[in-house]
Image (tube, rainbow, N blue to C red):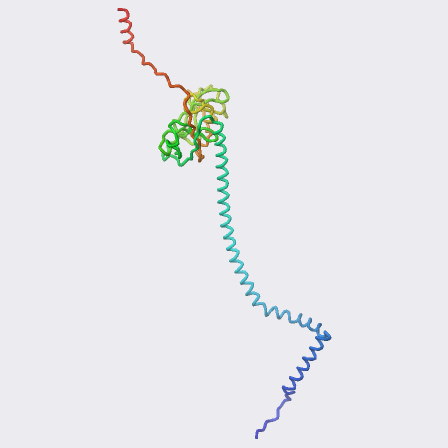
Length: 303
């Protein structure tokens, strides 16, 4: 027989009694809150007291979620920025192409207007590349003998004379630009009708009026057109504009610098004019008789 020592302290109610007490209390609270709404104010006070504890408990999960959102958003923004840069570059390239096409269309419209004004037949040609010789001003076009291109045909653009065909191949042709050193173009001053010869200097965008007298009536801004007296260039084609005049008494002639009106170094398409030479051929010069021949003729006549 076991003997349990008496407790030193009072232990209270038994577990079953506690269960019954708390169950009855729960039922009482449920009835009081559900039927009479007695605990509404108490619930509000408890919510206010417990809210800081809820925030503290949820802080780690909230921080983890915000960190994940930050890194995800950062990666998404980087991808969007990269895509926007790519779209921007693509749009810029398309804009450049559109501007190039617009400029090319404007140039083609100008060429068509020039072709309509010109009485001679003209062939549209594309500039393929420049000549390899750095000391010459020549270009190569994509039209040749198969397209009825011949040596001596003038080449123009929408602004003026570009050059002259100097070598023809079956499918290509070489054009010497008017800025090439030694290339000559007979010109006429529109303002006063003064005829002269315009020569290339070999320098890009520079021409020089040859044999202009020191007192010649040439002014800055004068427009020079082809005179047509050489039988190569049709008369009236714009060639150049006078930009500088140097009257140096130490020289025999004035130095007249001109600027070509045609875009001789920047055009991609030009017109080759099938110009027919309207100038009759030069008469054959008779050889001069030597003094002995003339004396012999007189002696035989007197005898």
